[in-house]
Length: 449
Image 1 (cartoon, rainbow, N blue to C red):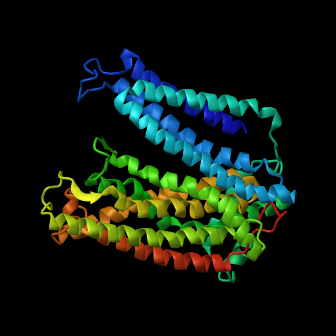
Image 2 (image 1 turned 45 degrees about the horizontal axis):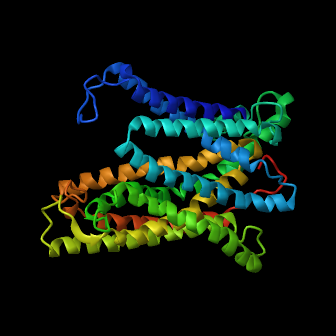
Image 3 (image 1 turned 30 degrees about the horizontal axis):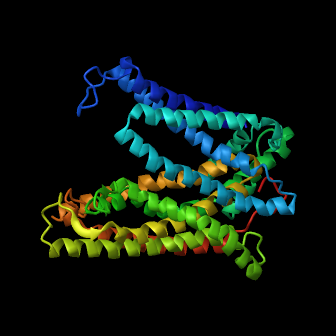
């Protein structure tokens, strides 16, 4: 809990510094004014700005998994009713996060573009400080659990993993299997600590067994990253008018992913889960892996739909003679992008929320915050993989005289790229199904598994 409020405090500090960098004349270039299009900040001004951003980023990296794990810890695993509610908690946690993010995207973008960056940063700081205050007011009502075995669980498992790595590196002809090697991981020099080391070894194995699921969801994260990149770029070339005067910013098209998720979460939690529970007998309707797999399967559909829409956009572009006029609006409504965005939002309700619950529930109890950090790392690594794939494809296709990703989107081949991602997602789905088939869920009441 102390980590939670510490990270929340750092987010408030970062947003406060961003606000100050916008308000105080000392921290923004003298030649900057409302009509300025180009400013030259000093090194001090840049240092403050980037320090503020990195402070917010580091704080969020710690706050998100810690606070979510702490919230889930408020439900008693030994109480059947509360245990069933825990699955619902992850649904509504995500609902609130997406709702807040969607409102911020719509409102704060407008404020910063049309009112002032000072007001935009200031509003963010006020709400973050208010959230920290509300969190601290509940201190006396929170539940706390001691699962540390009297020492730092991370250092204990790190010791076991290091010993395991050394034995794997040295090798031994007498070791018949990797499982046998794992069983020797806690065999450390000091016999007085053998019991604690056994726990460390079990925790190490508990982390290792999650790796296939982690790895088999990386392409899903690659698919998800397209929503904030190429989906947005597609939208910038299309007709985004609402009525006769208002034009939707292309970046705001991402809001439809959040809106569809917000609309689907209550349907899933209040309608689909009770309905599925009648047939499966599962308290959560379907298992965590079934939920994740459903979203992974939907990601294949998302990419196929996106490829079809891009083919339609390129065909319209050719028919209207706009191929070499990238700044012209293609007479094709932005609503063509809605199916892929809506499907992406629904897929997130299955996979993203399912992964959060899975990595919280299946890691050793002492690693629950770390487990949710592993979950978040899927999407961080997925973004890097997406960048690598795009760079590799661009390098290969450019050498052959026809890049898939030229500056002129009308001459690009996003349709080929989307079909490639659909194929990779289908392969990922098969790998995930194999991993899920052999996965054994953690036994309730065994904190080290």
